[in-house]
Image 1 (cartoon, helix red, strand yellow):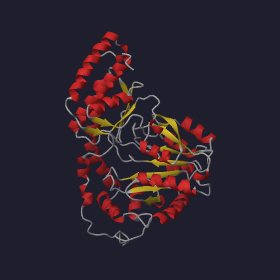
Image 2 (tube, helix red, strand yellow):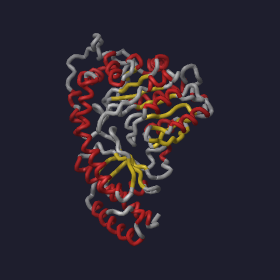
Image 3 (cartoon, one colour):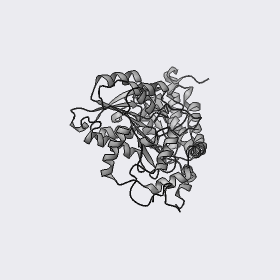
Image 4 (cartoon, one colour):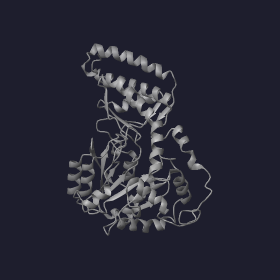
Length: 424
């Protein structure tokens, strides 16, 4: 039976350290060059989607619109219906953008900064701006708010989503808090799914700022791996709570078809949508309708998409199995780390012993495995415990991933032992 590492004597730790250093040196000698820094789809996933790139013989939409020409700012009606059916959203609330939901989020912050919304002052005219940032969270969300000088407030995550006691208290007492970032299903990086009660509380909570916005980035809303999880409807929650204009909803097909060549959308209330289209009408005459048609003619409808995602899950599942089985075999009994087993999404989040994440990732990189930087999952890249590590298993081949995970576990153990030996 394996004894937990924090129960080992100093002599036992010293012996284990020598053993792990020898094992680590063998990996260094392999001259590995494996990249797990971001959640990029593997080539096998991209190959599965190649039918989207087949020649578009008929460039006309269902209503006869010529997709080769200008116009249709809000996106083709059939594309909006597709997103509406998939996400259980009124198509009239949907605006189809270009290929990137992140661009739509960035642009939404810019509009709020420059013009405000709902008759309230432009955010740039206010003395102080703050945003709630459930953490660990998505580094690119945090980068957007930091870019505009918006103060980020870390909110802890629970197994049901952000700690709503903290969220409600902060939002109710400070009118400088203008919004919250949310990845509600299979959150990046922990894979947490917001409970129905969390969604309901977000919709009805009192906020000191009347123009408070929920940035609802449902990036992994159809990325089920170990069985489907149903997410409560945020629009229903906001309507029931008397806050119909509170949510901006984002989604894209970037990891369904091709990153950089998917179709992105945002959705908002009728009043918000009208304001957004007014500003977008100055910015563009319309997004790529040909790409909308290409995507639609492959994904077709909600049922076809569900089948397509099940096929992608069959490719992804072995990768997640490798990560989770390796962590369980190498780290659990010794108590070296803790992690959440996600049911979908693109990541696995692991917490080392406090103070060990940076050194663990340095060791991994020096041995040829690049991972997401320590602290990246927190605002300002500051993890107060220096413990969280985002594992992105999707890009390497299964064989590469097996090697990378074994090396990673050696690094986790070696750094933990060094810490317990008092080396730092």
